[in-house]
View 1 (spheres, helix red, strand yellow):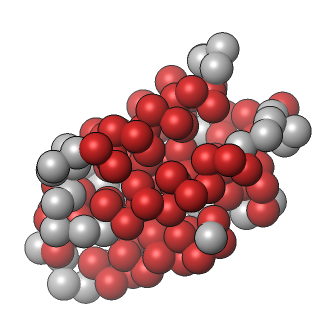
View 2 (cartoon, rainbow, N blue to C red; view 1 turned 60 degrees about the horizontal axis):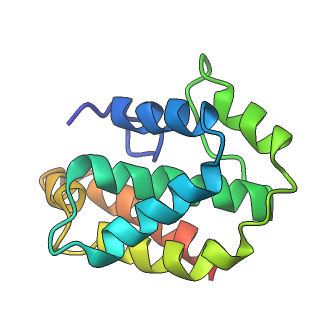
Length: 136
């Protein structure tokens, strides 16, 4: 796991999705696909987990103005949110919540990896649960 902290953006794989979303002509489709992949997976792979958490964070920021902790050197997230603050993503909230629940379930590689860290697992999971609550 290429993580340096428990935050959603404290992982190299998360920034791969930031770049993908930032360079997309249809970011809403990326969000939608990430959530559908999670909801249809028997077991959600590591990269797909990050696609869900990053996509949900974008939606949270667009709709609720939440400012997640991102790497100081990577302002693409905030630039994207500012540029797309009028993007209508409200219809994606229910699927975001369902997909995030998969990420913190026993059918998730990311959850499985985090359970090995007794100290940070509750913080990581708590961050995801707070995101779920904001998107309900």
